[in-house]
Length: 268
Ligand code: OOG
Ligand code: MG
Image (tube, rainbow, N blue to C red; front, top):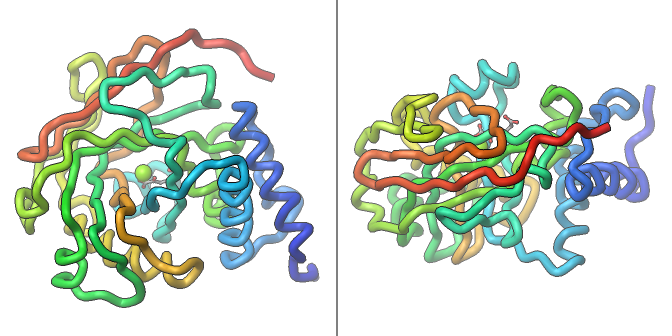
């Protein structure tokens, strides 16, 4: 038997994950000492991002997770999850990603949507498409705050669904994506390390946007105008190391990328 978590418990867990992210130091899974249900896990996520917002960061969107079989198989979790993106997580295309700011970062090839209008609740494909003013190739940098990059469903949700940084390429007209299946690849130093297609993302990345609107309305207030939605990785994620030049190709949407700077250092 365990009692429902109160606000102080939620804040304590949120502070643990926020501290781990700020100090780039892995912590034990929350589930090792605290029983969390999914609603409590999303409450911890909201509180931990709330700490960033209190420091002056601004929410700029959401990310979807486990929208592809490749990711579910890699991580052993098969429920759709989502997390929050802030302005401080955004990395300019071509910029350097300082390795020392992360614990064990991985990159994954994604597609980003930009919303011209809010989107909430159960929306149709036509409504989802009408709300988007641009799409872009994107890379999400995930960095579980848990030791060994291992977690349960509720652990990863509490940890902002591992989200840590993201890069978006040039925003283009959404009709370029339309209902087309695009070849997608992740490259390191120009060599393809992971490949798949946009159909790996729930059959069609627009379905991920529909799910984002629904899920962000259950545990939040939906998607706001101007927000970015990362649809989820089309392939498994690839572990990063200093010196890597990482890029993605998403068919007619084009390419984007970044470089990992710094040195590998040992952390306690
Ligand atoms: C969780 C995040 C999954 C995706 O694109 O599927 C995700 C993780 O793999 O650590 O971002
Ligand atoms: Mg992702």
